[in-house]
Length: 270
Length: 286
Image (cartoon, rainbow over all chains, first blue to last red; front, side, top):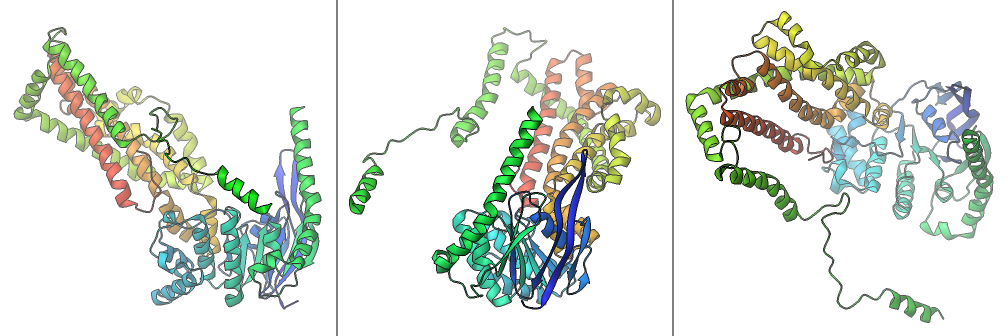
């Protein structure tokens, strides 16, 4: 594995409820190496988004700590760029101003900001839309700008929380290929949350599979396709083999979620 | 086999030579209707009552003391205009609304945003506001007169009391509705607390704030007339009261009509200003 850049040490999260505390994440430890794309897949409600929000500094863990380059992080920061599933572009700023937002917050000069915006809007193929407002863009375009906006801060690590989850299947495929292209140039270390197995296998160097709630890491799978991946990979036998492996690990967890919901429903009504 | 299947599926989607044209119905839940139809219905909603009015008055079927003829009303309006009373009353009413509403907005917008943004501010102000806003404003008139007398400050205070407590709660709600992810995105882009507040939360509330002002200025008109009907010697509300005292139905109607027009005009100003002031905002209500 390459040199570690991000270490999660025993992160857990409990929420207080009326009937005692609810554990959404059991103590979890993992390491992400420089330039790696590590994804975490799991059934809904398994705490994978909570885990990412803890790394982003948006949620405080009940126990454990997050180390970035060996230093503990306690709050959000520009060195951990984040892309959300919801559309989070600032609607009152143009595409270009959105991409410049981070550099502007730290007081970068106008010339530098313009250059960063030009570079990253080129990278996501939206240079022609730089003076549009977000409301004029499609969902896929908004997420492209969100990626450019996060990258304009030159983060040490990019945290992506189901960034393509709200997009239609065709757009999602295009976005996955775009992300690979960007990564081949920028080499940004990425921690990626998804529930889409194909997406995880196509993009990742390593995949962690999580259990149903309370979530914990169930298995780690290395994806040996290197960094040069073409769309044809999706139809190769090797791809299907890893896909099947992840599917088997996840399937029983998905079943567990549905069973738990039905049990909770019948006890609530009965 | 594959070919035959192909042909079959092509047959299945074949388009009839002459496509039937369907006229959209006027009564489809939530669906748009042709613009022409919309305008026709809207025009009819004014024209039919006016036609009915003309018919009832010119034919002599209605008591002229209760319902004057349109011509009669027009001449009353001209008379009021030439006397100079009408313009003076309009001017003073608009000034009262302007000052009362501005005072209320200047306080309610920052306090409402604080209440929506910080739970401490909410705890400090919301329960109090929640209590006082259920006190009907006319019930406060005696108190207002004891405190502020019967001059201009009293009317402005009444408009302020009528709008502030509603407005501060709506502004707090507008602030709470700003998506949390928007604030989180800013934090992960390096914004500190103050930067999140001023660079993200405030601009995000602007469309809601403009919309709130539009609703609240409507409330302000209501309280203006209450204030002017009760104790005053100027303004449109007073003009209506005076007309009633002299049994001048024509002048009462002129007053009501002008109040309606002024209200409509203020609303139009907001409606036209919104897309120009905030071109980035998603389309708001009509």
